[in-house]
Image 1: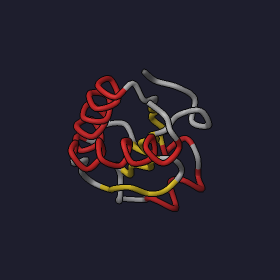
Image 2: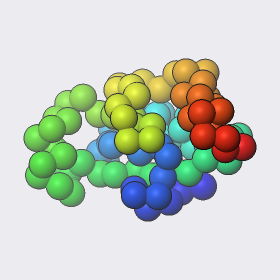
Image 3: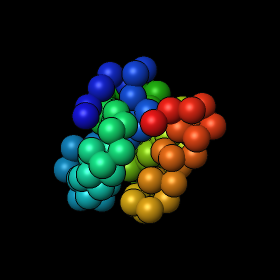
Length: 92
């Protein structure tokens, strides 16, 4: 389920034409479909501040507003992070 950046639990900062970004987005989409969590893709090239901040580090994955990974997504690690937040706040 894709949402707006402010509403999404997972944000993937990426750019067009980036094969690592495409792979990360597919993995995030799969995990979020399993868990019922929301995610959004943000193109860093559309924002000069994001482009300067992340440069060649994309894709960068954030979970609940905190940086989680960059370059690659580990699906098991992402599931754990999403589950941890749910247990802490009684979600799910």
